[in-house]
Amino acid sequence: MTKLEGARFVADRHLEPDTPELRARWSGFAWNEANVAKAKEIVARYPAGRQRSSVMPLLDLAQRQVGAETNTQGWLPLPVMEYVAAYLDMPIIRVVEVATFYFMYNLVPVGRYHVQVCGTTPCMLRGSDDLIAACKKRGMHFGHVSDDGLWTLTEVECMGNCASAPMVQINDDNYEDLTAESLDAILGALAEGKQPKAGTQLKNRHTVEPEGGPTTLTAMVKENHDYRGEW
Ligand code: FES
Image: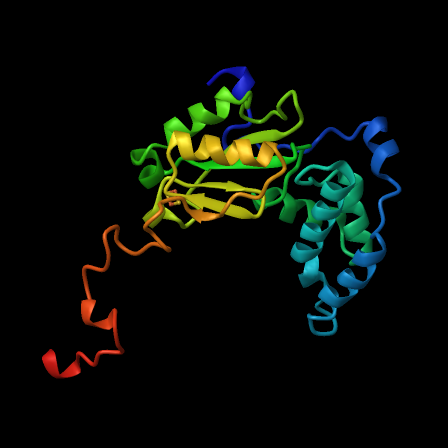
C-alpha cells in the first residue's frame, strides 16, 4: 500500500487535527433553522432520561448540515461533535467514540460524492478491482478528495448487497451489478449534476431475483399458489 492510499482501510480512520483554523471555521456551528426543529423531533423519540441515545441520528444530522454548508457529502469536525455533545449534555469522548466506531461518519473532509467501493469477497470475485480502477481513472485516490473536489474514494467491507455484487455506495445510494463501464457512466452522470438510477444496473433485473427469471416457487409468479398439498 502506498502512502497515497493511506486511508483505504477502516483501521486508518483518524480525526482531522484540532488546529486554530479548524476552530475558526467550525466553533460557531449550530443547528440551522430547519435542523433546530429536526433535532428536537429526533430527541423526542427517546424516553425521558435517555436523550443521549439520539447521538447517532444527531451526528448524522450534523454531518448532513456540514455537507450542505460545504457542498460535500459532509463530515464531522471536532467542534461540531462538541456541539452535539453539549446539545445532549454528554461527555465529548462518548460522542467521539460513536463517531469513530461507525463508518457512516466521515472524520475528515470529503468530496461532493463519497464513493465507497465494497471490496469484500463476493464483490471482489465479481470485479471490484475493475471498479476501483474506473474510479482511479477519474482522478480518485483512497483517502483523498480529488483535485476537482468531486470525489472521495474509500474501500469498505460488505454492504449487504452481495446478491447483486459488485456494488458501490455513493452518498445515500447503492449501485449494484456494476461493471467498470456502468460505474463510469454513473460517475459521469453525477459529475454533470444528474441523479442516475440507483440499485441494479442490469436491464432485466428488478432487484436480486435470478437473472433470466425465477428458478424456484415458479408457480408463485402468476398467483399466490398454495404449495402445502404438494410437500
Ligand atoms: S461483499 Fe460486497 S456487498 Fe457483500
